[in-house]
Every structure is written in C-alpha cells, then in structure tokens.
Length: 112
Image (tube, rainbow, N blue to C red):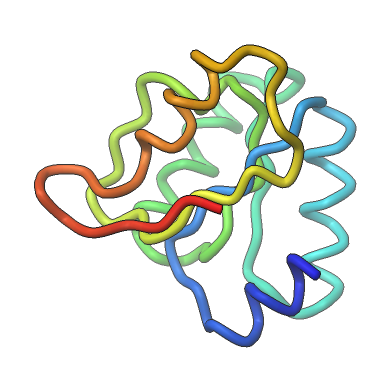
C-alpha cells in the first residue's frame, strides 16, 4: 500500500518513520529494489553515515529517508513534503515530533 502511494504520487523529500533499526534498513532496501531513491537513517549507523544520508536527502539525491525516531527531533529540512508513519509510535509525543518535520516555515506538508 505505502509503495503504491509513494510511486503514484512521485514523492520527493518524504520521511518514512518506522519503530526499529532493522525495520528501517529492510524497508529502505525494499524501496531501493522497487526503484525508489532511498536511504535509511537509524542509530546503528555511524554519525558520519547519518550525516551523509541526511546530506543526500537535503540535496535531493535521495527522495525517501526511512528512519527511526532518531530523526523525529532536530532534523530541519525545509522542503519535506510528506511524513509517513509506516509504524505508529507508542508515545503520542513522538508522533507530534515526527509529523512536525513537514510543513515547516509556513510551507504546506502532508502527514500519513
């Protein structure tokens, strides 16, 4: 279902949130196999790897960033168009932080 939405809408600059590091890595690989430009961002990656993935995302070299809640706070990318909660967080406050990554600085955004 999510794959169809992502492909049919031609999304760029979208964050896909999952609840586990393993889930992030697996989903990112799956999206890559489907031809979507994707990176994973989670706590098992080194700081350098996380910065490189985020930089690729900011530059538009990567359309989808599949991430754990390591990205729910403190990431400020101006053009994030969509936030997808692939897995719902257990804590409602985390949900608020996740969806707050889109529609920044007066721009419009969508959270699913």
